[in-house]
Amino acid sequence: MMLRATGVRTRSDGARDGPSTWLDDHGDALFAYARVHAPHDVAEDLVQETLLAAMKGDATFNGRSSRRTWLIGILRHKLADHVRQRRRFRADDVVLATLVERSFDDSGRWVRPPGPWRVGVGDLGRADVQKALEECLRRLPTRTAEVFLLREHAGLDVQRLCQVLNTTPTNVWTMLYRARTVLRECLEQSCLTDRRPDAPCGK
Amino acid sequence: MTTALPTCRRMSQLVSEAEDRPLGMRERLLLVVHTLYCGSCRAFRRQIRLLRRNMRELGESLTLSSESRARIEQALRDAESS
Image 1 (cartoon, each protein chain N blue to C red):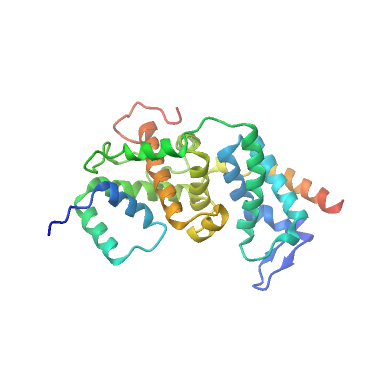
Image 2: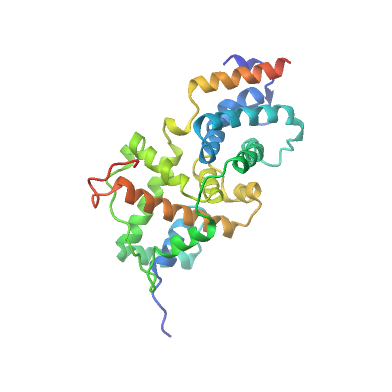
């Protein structure tokens, strides 16, 4: 890529890292993260703003966190402004905890036991499945959706998640558990099982 | 001493946490025994793993299009040369 010619440093481990490689290396991760909170076009703008701000502030990168963690930190500031401006309705954490609680009866058994899904590994890229998933993701409280995406899409481990979100591992495990429980139930209800063969995906 | 059987509520938490941290010996044992006879928790594990895999291999909807990539590259170049 053209941009590659400028501003690339070689790290001690030999990998290239500089403003021009950030878009390639981290662009999708940043975009996916922004996309939880913002519509498509706004998410794009946020990624651009983040990379621009990162270029200007490169000197503040101390190398203690990974480059991606650092970039996501900048994106989070940009997002905070955006989310403050335009707040969608989302279940808050209390509601989410209640939702998960209601997945089990008093003796701790599943109320609606997870069943077989019609989709398998081969269907993962399917547009209707992705649409249903995005819709379900949007119903999560912001912070929970953040944790989920940072873990599962950006690929951060729990230790890094704690750094980025300034919280404890126990908290992160709980949020991931809640996110997964609610997402899988939402997906199951939207389209993925034989129990509701007529239910269209993505509705 | 009577020990209550671990509930699906508790075991599903372990199923999830097993994706994020190494479980202890006792936790692993509880989980193995539980998932031997509990098809619902096995299904839960299959589903969250499918979900994980899906998030890693997300399709177009969560990646930057080549147009937006080009646009952002241009903006970065402009900023760098100014």
